[in-house]
Image 1 (tube, rainbow, N blue to C red):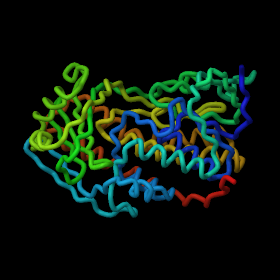
Image 2 (image 1 turned 30 degrees about the vertical axis):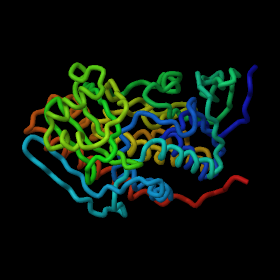
Image 3 (image 1 turned 45 degrees about the vertical axis):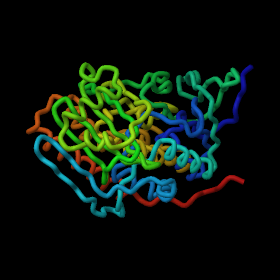
Image 4 (image 1 turned 180 degrees about the vertical axis):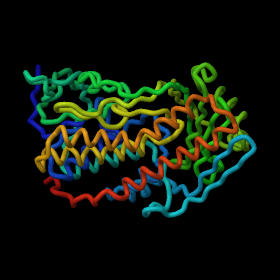
Length: 392
């Protein structure tokens, strides 16, 4: 049996950080929005969790940071870099109102964003696996087709489909979004959650083909990760992580031994970064669906929240304010690319694990400069309008 849903202004496919944030902002602007996801509410996903200044700024602007804090997410006010024989501690200074960084578990952050979308008036449906898009006779995308857990076929008509469904995006593939830039590096990352680990903030440790880090998160735990070439990391797990941590600078090995280890670890086997075309007739991409880079830079969540707002502003300009679709969505992609290119290029080099001890400090400085430019661009966006409507 096929179920036809009502027509929406926008259907967002993927209810993770990028998709839920986009749906929240679109509904906040008064558009009729449907947010769908194949998974379940509050499910975990692969993530490094770390929010950089730009991500914290976005949550603050949207009025959601207090919920992240109230969920027990620790404030991070210090970042320590270690490479070769150098130790570089940095105490966070207030900038554009950002006084601390946060790294919420995705079981915390994603539900907060989904709840915000629902509070703004978006309809949310979990358990719907989108299998493709529908088009009119001119090949314009006009809706989605998918399958509910019950087995029913679901069709939803809409003016714009937003693909926010990750690196294996069904929407990006269905619309044949071309890859416009592809990285050259592949790294494998394995990580787990230690309890009671002594740390005072973010930690990033770099040696050639052996990088590791610590990201404090919820419930007194810290996400500990190791990154290396796929050949060196293999299938990941505790053994490779322990070996790589032992090769990186600092005393993390000793501190891990004094903490409670995880029962299991997760591994991302890696893939090259990319930038895909971000829009076409009746569709747009946001988050990893359109732009992905290696997690070693820990900037994916911040980019997701950044691009959610850039895309939401473009779609609102089209559907509510009468702007030309081509002009508004191409401007979205131009902004995304302008803010992403420097981050993409330096992260691709770092993830390649082909740098030397002498080269990594300069690469990290380039990464920091790109993040500073991004923060300034976000901070100068005009304020968001007040909530247009709320559900009855």
